[in-house]
Length: 356
Image (tube, rainbow, N blue to C red; front, side, top):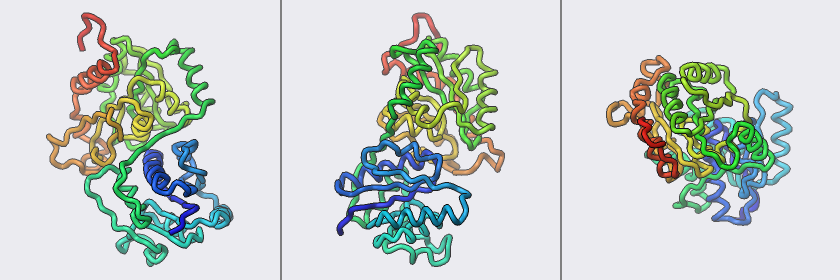
């Protein structure tokens, strides 16, 4: 099969879009001459821009009306794709793959779910296999109809020079220039049931600051995340640096790239830090850490799978409470011990006489 132009469609959230980079890498390695376009939701494109294996990233705007949809379809058809791949089970991706005009259209077997007759929009369907593999590896199953299989997932994130310069200037203003160590702590998520206890996060921040390791607290721009970060800061005895929703995604990537270590919960910045090759300590609750854990040999996960047989329940908190008791059960002592060990590996030992 001659493949010159490929459209990959990933209509999901920020972290999901970043993990799709592994599929692009595998496709390009197997078909070096293929020119890859990615169609992703507007607001997530920063996860893929600058990637050497991707020729263009096309943002899909929400709520643009039928005229915007028509312009997008015309733009896709002008590119004359040979292959269109819908990487999720969604109806909209299936329709766009069909309307792209690609002669080969690959998608996930809907199994009678979603739009009636959706399976006929594809020329090739794959059966989803949810067997505990990492999400990036499961994503790559869509390449099997092209004869591409058995490749290891590799996710990378690329930072433009101007964004790195902006963050470097801010770090210099905060006294963190010249490579001074600091830890990025991202304790929030748009889904609050993925968040750890506020007082526990504050305790860990104070511990790190007592080790003469500066902490930069970050959150997303959502108002609920900002309030949660305010609550954490109000409980800190120390004075960490705070960047609550003030950075673009590329600027956050630049900050992570300069950091010594990342500590946080199951959210997009965790995947970003892993893609940048940083040591990652991640706390997991209801989500399956095997599927969604940081894709890096420098990653470490703390969860309560051994004590909570219900895990991974994948629910929004216990009994709909938006609170995950399994996540809240993780102790500050566990986290402090793990962070101290990871910092020691990075060459940062606690000052003499300091106790956790």
